[in-house]
View 1: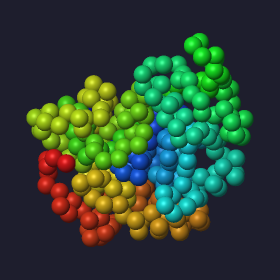
View 2: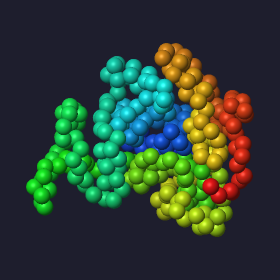
View 3: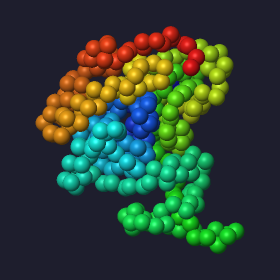
Length: 293
């Protein structure tokens, strides 16, 4: 593991054609890492997560994505993902849809090294007909016919969290959704954090460590790396940006202008954050560096 710049981490560990797990669940969404992928022009990516939000919509608009493996995609609490809808209607995007639960099972199977996990899910309704090669297995103990949910092992995961030590032990608290499962199922992990703290501080709260250092491929310190989503204990959700994105992403030309201004038009996260008023971000309003949750 190396502490490095985010641009170098993406350059070294994200390749065209990769399957990329996007961490975060309303909280700690890795927007900075996603924007760096757009800036570097990575192409033909498969993106996966259970509940996909506007970062994935932006990656689609940026021309990075050829396929999605998701349980849901939209603008949380607001509505549709408009770039996603246009790409799907145009036939430029492949969609593999699972339930949130079964996609989490796929990642968990990948994490523990199992080829599949049995489940009673996907045994009814119309969704099973739309999942190619979905198999069943007979329980050797009860004779019950169960769905064989296949493992999913992404090539690389993007994770944002509150802090890490210099060795790369990453700590996150607050809602994490499928972040831990998806990251640990992945072959490589790029982690961005708000700050690096002393190792003894991390050791005082071992229950907060979601990613051990030996699993982290690259670590970058990126304050504000989850904006406009929130980071518990550091800054709040910028609701206005999500509402604004719903409006501007309805038109391709306005979305292109947004990406030009806020992604391609800035060199790094610091420059990006400089475009927003400090009061809008509630920036580190009550946080003291290195404080415990």
